[in-house]
Length: 116
Image (cartoon, rainbow, N blue to C red; front, side):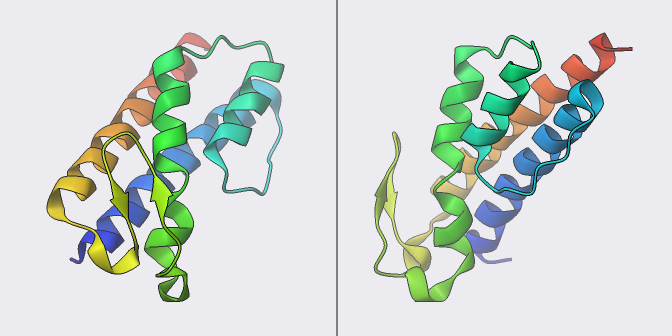
């Protein structure tokens, strides 16, 4: 699997997890890809979102377009660990993004369990 595919799937896992939480706690489905906007909507429903979650979302968010669309190869963005374009994803960047997605998914699972 190519590194950009891993990054995209990490972002998607985080996005789907946040949407599941939003659906569970607010009975609301929003058709957006921006993780930070999903977190804002979760906060509007009354859930407290830890700072590390906001950081993980900010780190993953730019990778949705950069890892998915080859025509965005000239689009560079800044994240804490890297500056990359579509064709320069490395295994290290992929691992970093997977770690950020795992933080989000773990937090969401715990929040959904606490809502029961």
